[in-house]
Image (cartoon, rainbow, N blue to C red; front, side):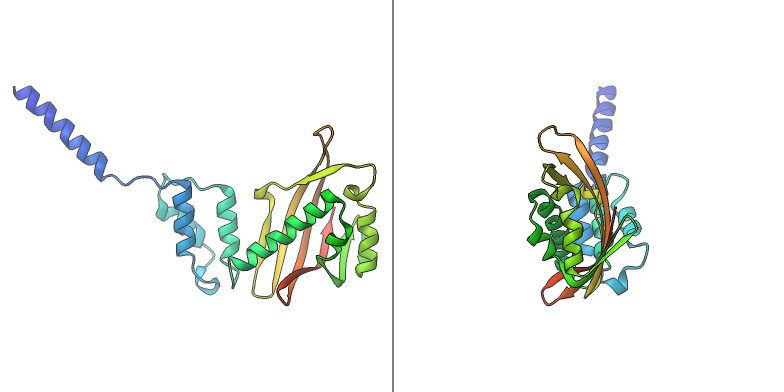
Length: 203
């Protein structure tokens, strides 16, 4: 009888301890809490993401994508709106290349923008048109679709200017093989309600 009582007590207190123990935060919960607690740009401090990760505890397992986007977001005065708009610029660049839509891709650049690639600089929208006409995705013989891994997109935005870096894999739609890998970095400014690229380096 005594042994049974002792066993019951052990089981009871073990269950109580398990109930009282804090649950590890899921990746989704971690991200939600990060967003809710994100301070403004001038309050964040360089170690904000590290401090938040420590508060979530060892059970938290946020994806690399969430961490990088939230770190970028702390420097955006109007986050997340500016970040979303700049992400759309990046997606439009890749989408226009996949569709060979030259007009769409040119609409993403300021009239006096520059593009530098392979040691040559293309200044102004007409020169940029020439650059894209001869770029791999726009060549008639290439049937490529662009794919950008989410973790390869870097955005740092302020109120009216931003930087964008990303990598794109160009996949042959017939064979599924990667035909090219491109890297781009650019500077964007806000023109009214639209973000436009003023300078880009590509390779």
